[in-house]
Image 1 (cartoon, helix red, strand yellow):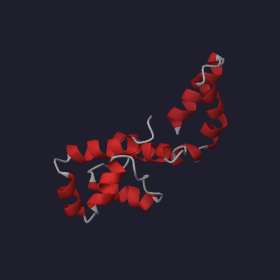
Image 2: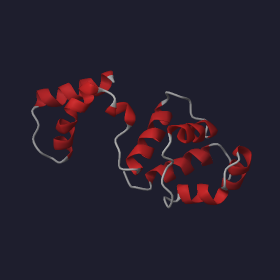
Image 3: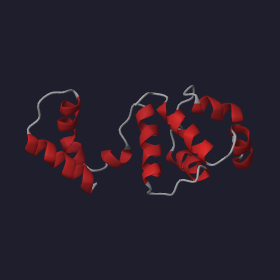
Image 4: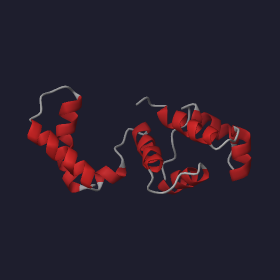
Length: 123
């Protein structure tokens, strides 16, 4: 996922609302310059969950939907962090090294990989 993928995703969602950048900003009281920089990846996603939630609602995302989680996941990854929902699940945290080894192409026993997948599904 590219570093600016949060901004690209934001823009994609905004366009889906049928609003131009200026119309979207005017409707929700945002600064068009800042939002333009955010969409182009020149400005990092907001640090606070409150502002991200505000943006998500303005974009018409429903709390708990796949788009909602993707929005927050992309924001975390753009900041070089893991999504908070994963960091609060002890079982998932314990198994993340298996995922990292897998992503690096290192061999991982099938049973360990299956445990990780199940832990993520339950979180």
